[in-house]
Image (tube, rainbow, N blue to C red; front, side):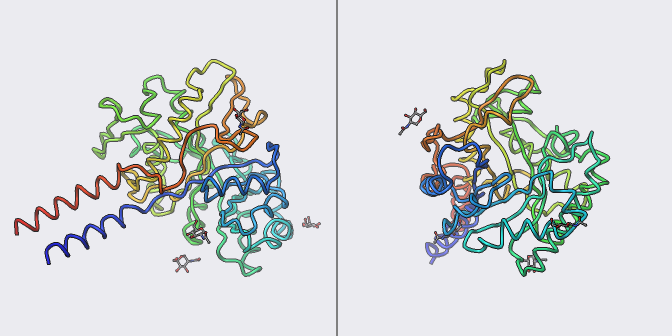
Amino acid sequence: MLTFASLSLLLLLLTTSSACTAIGVSYTASDAASSPEHIAASLRSHRISSVRLQAPQPSVIRAFTYSNISLLLEVPNHLVSSFASNISAANLWLYTHVVPFYPRVRISAISVGSDIVTASQVDLADLLIPAIQNLKRSLDSLGISEISVSTTFSFIDIINNSFPPSSAEFQEPINQLLIRPLLQFLEENNSSFFINLYPYKVYTLSAEIPVGFALFQDHPYNFRDDSVTGVRYRNLFDMMVDAVIAAMTVSGHENIPLVVTETGWPSYNSGTEPEASHHYSEMYYQGLINHLKSGLGTPLRKEGVAEAYLYELFDNDTTQVTGSGMQNWGIMYPNLTMKYNIAFSSHSRRFHGGAFAAMTAVFSVISALFLL
Ligand SMILES: *[C@@H]1O[C@H](CO)[C@@H](O)[C@H](O)[C@H]1NC(C)=O
Ligand SMILES: *[C@@H]1O[C@H](CO)[C@@H](O)[C@H](O)[C@H]1NC(C)=O
Ligand SMILES: *[C@@H]1O[C@H](CO)[C@@H](O)[C@H](O)[C@H]1NC(C)=O
Ligand SMILES: *[C@@H]1O[C@H](CO)[C@@H](O)[C@H](O)[C@H]1NC(C)=O
């Protein structure tokens, strides 16, 4: 009887601990040498279950028909003002990008613009909420309720005081102008908060962060304590996620799911950052995937982020030209072989993290039962 009870507990704890993040990849179709159909097939063979399409052509969306890969579509920034002023523009976009393919193509969400509002540039804040509302109304009028609508921000543009995470807040004035009303909309409509989150960028800006802390390396000195909450962080990604959670909590919406729409580490940089290397990039992706698959979550959110999209599928030589030179962020070569030896599938999950915590809990419960 005792054995049966322990066994049920074991099963219960193991199941509850394995709620893990869906891992996807961000794909800009214009970079690819292969056809979108080949790319969709290749993504499936690597067990990548979700794809974020930036400024997608309808032909690229069609390539995912019956692939069972869920898509996050991004409306380009230049359409935001027409969506805001004219619901027909939102309708027209849906009639070309969604209606012909849905639901044979699994479309899970639409981001109206990406990174269009930063703290220094607030003109578009007035347009973004009306654009999102018009797209939502347009979906409603088509009877499509399963596709959620949101917009995408960048961590470094909107978060203030991110260390320690518990002191983080959204920057003003966009917090009042845009983020609070957006969070209200997201909560009412079961949508998620979308954020581009790069430990690499925070690491390159902060000399005191050890590279291993940004790369998920277990090391006795790789930790940071949040002196307010008393929580210990073992990687920079969790600190950044919890900074976003803390900022949402200050704004009164701590339960909105978080989707990391971009995260990555460059494998090459023509400039002066030696950490942009193949080796570090591989460490980042494998560390990230292991961490997300562990089901451990973060100290402030035990279920962790809902989804995370690796940035990006192919090297894109035009978009990431920064002050420090050209950077390569792709995880796949144009011939569709993976650059890195990383596994997306949860079947290859190593025994660590969540499973270990669950086992420890089970053993203490079992010991407690025996003591009774
Ligand atoms: C489709 O994907 C979902 C979630 O990614 C999964 O649960 C389901 O089993 C998949 N269906 C098929 C037929 O592969
Ligand atoms: C609204 O958008 C539609 C579709 O793009 C366009 O045909 C129409 O001219 C627009 N109306 C106004 C008033 O801008
Ligand atoms: C939000 O999700 C809950 C639970 O899945 C559901 O009951 C509710 O109807 C949804 N609300 C909207 C506005 O979609
Ligand atoms: C794919 O391209 C990469 C980089 O150019 C090369 O190293 C690799 O051998 C190629 N793989 C195949 C199967 O052709």
